[in-house]
Image (cartoon, rainbow, N blue to C red; front, side, top):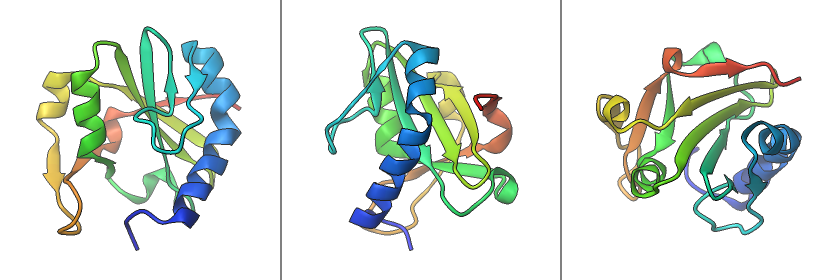
Length: 132
């Protein structure tokens, strides 16, 4: 259950590949090839972090989790920060722009002692993108 594994990372990369061409075209960004890079996509103006959730549909939970470390990265970067959530099970894609005031109000939780907090972003805060 939770935490980083090589299998989960490979599944995330595979999901990212499904939508990478669309993301690059929509936001004029390039993929980040390195495994441990801060961002999944970047340009001089925009950075993007992508999270994928395999085997579930978007309406399963009222809030979607994002690692607080990723949100801290957004707060430190002067470029526009966009978070993407991709659900391969139904190929739905959502985005939210990082805005400090908005994110300050989102709840936090810690699922495992060895991990940082997760930010709980309400499903209703995300915007669905028709990309198929």
